[in-house]
Length: 611
Image (cartoon, rainbow, N blue to C red):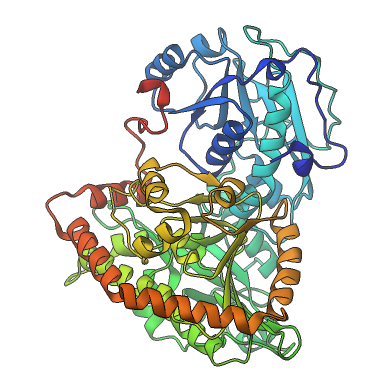
């Protein structure tokens, strides 16, 4: 991705004069608490820019010192840390820290405070590591605008990550090998009002008081804590942490008005409706208090976490197809709509599943929505996924919860979930009377990536990351008909390499190798504008009927050569061994992922300096 596509007017453009990049790629060590979205994006972008990149997870000072000695990097980049870089490292090596705040902002809760304070002007700063947190010289910065009504996690993915990439590339153009000073002094950044040291946001500063807080306050506090650590509140008198909050429509608020603030009134999909002082909000996910023995609770859909009391509530459903203005502001995970003229019509199916996780319930709802869409007179169906993720496959938190339920198990829940998501892929593959498009507005991983491949076209924007493999989750074999879908796109050898490589891939790289069909738009906003035009053009194409006929013939020929049922049976047979076999790697990896257990070592496919 070119830097100018990421830049914001007024951003510091940098100066390449005398910089190391003029003489070839740098040796870069990414030092990060986890291989999170920003770290993955930098890994992809820096390698594409010609740099030699290796990764070390921040486990201990001794391990970091050893990694630096092995990698011998020109620069250490820290995109996501929870501890200080050891002095022996930053005092002898150039270490650049990516801070998710503008110049002058300091502290561990930069984006949290920005959401709580309702800021719109913000930025990302790349600064040199010194003894104090966020106090070193600024090497580069990138301004950005924060969207209203967005969660901290969503702002991080859509605004902070691309700005961080742009600022990091600018900083690297100033690197001089062997020096801890920039090739040229960066321009002095303008100061935003109110910047300075801001402490960690406390639990009290995010706590919800139903008796005194209006809907705007509740939403702002929950959004500032999403996806961690959550906003404290009481539901049914029990303390818990709230996530995934959504505004209730005017219609729903009117129905809620007779109740007292704090009353849990209804359920819809994963969410519970809670009365506020001036209306109501939908709470999608919660984490209950620890069990009596101290076992930490899981973050789950609110209607599942509080399954018993929620079952007694009335259900206030929202139909997937909400065509009227009155119903258009109704929140739900699923929304089907249509655009375009007769004989050139596009069906548009969004599924905003929290964090892209698709449990049994979500999969069943998506199959039902696909059946609804199949009955409509459209020429193209766009699967728009969610705004933050297209899909990340099976729901590991719900599977972990099944291990705690009497009469259930994680293995059984895993098998049910993989069967359910296979049903979604099958419904899409069998939709042969129109063209289908998987539109990746957000990242896709594991089963969610292969679910997208079940569409006729897969389109994404430049900021999308794909993880087309399963092995990072305890050597899972994978399903979703990947043994049929992947080789027909990239070939057998490339499919094997992708599955074994275990690395993230940028959308441009995915398009170049044939994994997806096209990559366009610098970000989700630009992508969606062009996506609509392309989908309408595809629906109105003069040869549309010919394309659909050819699709139907290919599917029939493939089915005759080897039925989809055979691919599914083979894949599920391998998955059954993952779930029920003697090798517990999947169950260990899932448990560590769900409970955010710290890493004991850096996987060797990332830490190339340790091979």
